[in-house]
Image 1 (cartoon, helix red, strand yellow):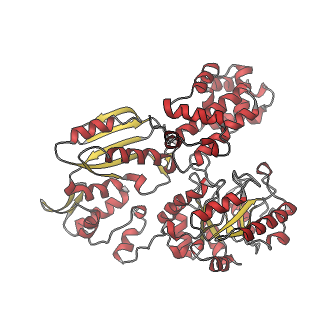
Image 2 (spheres, rainbow, N blue to C red; image 1 turned 90 degrees about the vertical axis):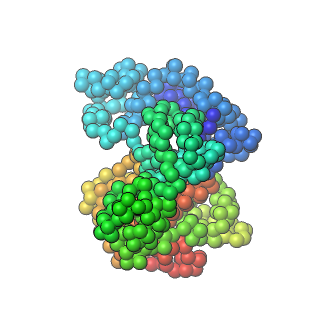
Image 3 (spheres, rainbow, N blue to C red; image 1 turned 120 degrees about the vertical axis):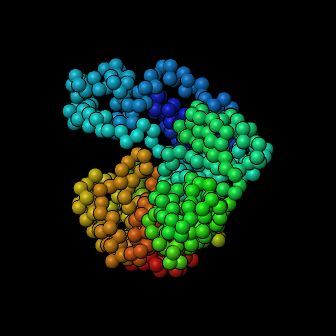
Length: 575
């Protein structure tokens, strides 16, 4: 059985949640949460490591017991410990933890004191006014819970992060490509466009004539398939174990380019292409480009675009947000590539909440070919992460300087991710900020201010001459937390005026600055920094996620500061 990292993460997270509800030792709970984070950070599949007989304990946070449990999950697809916990603690309690302001401890109290096991039990307890009577809750908590569960749901199944869908997508592509008589396999849809979240996965296959049924049999027989919605001779649809829907279509080679263009989308982009085709008195559909009944193009996407008078348009741009007009004018951008990035300017080490040492982060970045990195620990406001006060920071600056003298081939810069306080001030004094190479200012607290107050807070922070980069500007966490109410157009204008760069944070659940505002920032002349906000050496490899979002935002090498050599990069960021 092929088990992906996100499935192991889900199992370990469920174990930790159920243990915490049960009231087990906090160190044991923390161990499973840490193991989930470690596995979630891996850039390679743990299942492959198990198959190769590699030692999983080489990763901090994975001891012998947890390594054995990972092997059990990989070999069997489940964990005996989780099965036992679910017999002792109702799994339905985990649904209650999805409600804002309710964690494992509150769920455990409601379960013990009121016998609440399900959402229906909770609704009844709220109706009876029982929640506020429980010690540690009160009327405000009761009102918050009621408001949260009364909000309408946006959809029955949330869209999956692109990052989480990728392992299944690549596994499916590899599996189908290995089937005899299959010539081509391509992933299309929003996944190919690099959209932050994916609703389903579209797969196109070209195979030898007469083998269509065999391909479909193999498709629905893939080991990750949980349910078959539909099975036909040229089209089938399934649901995977991770709740990702996959649709496959077998297309003839002569129509492959047209089908790839059609199923890549977006719908708005395709509609605009069809209008161009009508003006040229031809027809474009998923089978090809037709002049009357004669197919004149369709084997490649390039031919489809050429038939309507356009050059090839990269998938990330296909949202009908000006790409067709740019193509007509010969003004399509030369989109940034991963290889253009020369350094990473946002990362954390074990000095605060990172999981690798300073030396380990520097060596890992050097192995990736970077010329420089910036170590940007949290400031004192983020006390839960061990944020640094002025003295701590000065001490660590000496440690960074010492490492910089020892390590060859990469420059290690002194930085900080300083909190932007509610009044727009910064969490550390100018006397220490001015001594740093890189200063990122970020909002981590009081993110629910009204739009005017939040915007003014950030604009005021940018008045500080030592703040060079505004970190994750909207504060969003995809599928978890909405962006702050903030006027991004005003912030972008202020960033231009004050010569402050905006960060595009590459963490898969952030991808913040969002791509529409990347384009607006670039058009305004604002500088962008693409960085990983890495908390481990494995996180450093997530730069590719940021590059995909940058490409969706029309960014070129010239728009991004950290595509420059060290001296030019520092000069660009200097206020």
